[in-house]
Length: 225
Image 1 (spheres, rainbow, N blue to C red):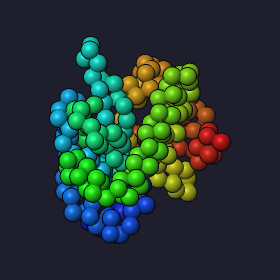
Image 2: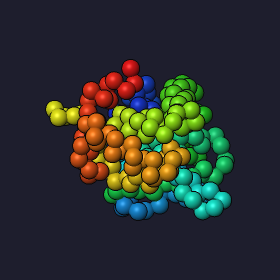
Image 3: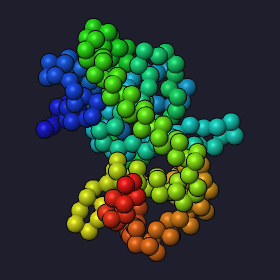
Image 4: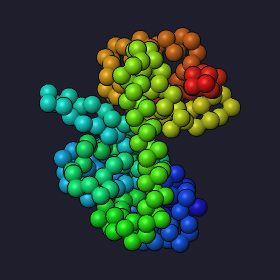
C-alpha cells in the first residue's frame, strides 16, 4: 500500500468505510520535514492536524523558566495534536522533527466541516480519539505515582510498545533521544535516568546504543502483565 492509502492503516481510521475514507483523503496534503524543523510552535493559531507517515516528532512545552518539558515522542501512524477539533485555542505545545520525515496534514477547518456533514464518521473518529486520550492520561498517572525506576521502566515499555521492531534477538528500538530528553519526559533528573539505564544494562534488559537498542522480549512481556 503506498501514497495516501497508507493512512488507512492508522488506528484512527480503521472503522471508516471506503466511502468515508475517500471523502477524508480529498483533504490531505503531504508535507516533508527535515530533522530540527518546527512543525508548529506553542501558542500559534491551530491550523492543521498531522499524521506521521514516516519519522519521529517530539512534542514539548516550555515553562516560565524557559525549560523544555517533553510531552511525548511520536512515530509512524501517530496523530498530533491529539485534541483540537472544534476548539479555537492555539497549539498547546511545540512539535519538532527529530529525524527527516513525511507527514500527512489536514486543515482543521476542513476536517471539522467534513465531520459535521457526516455524523457517523464523526462518532467513529471521536470514539478512537477518546481511547487515545485515555492512553495519554495513563502515562501522566504513571509519572505522578511511580518512583524513579518505575518511571524509567514505564517510559521504556511505552517507547518499545510504540516504536519497537521485533526480531529474533529481541525488540529493536532506534530513537535519537538523549537521557536528558527522557528525564524531561518523566520529570526526573538526567542522573536518575542514567542510573536506571545502567541497571538495565547490567540486568540484560537492554544492549546496544540509541541507534539500535535491543530490548529483552521477556522483560517487555513481563513488565505489564
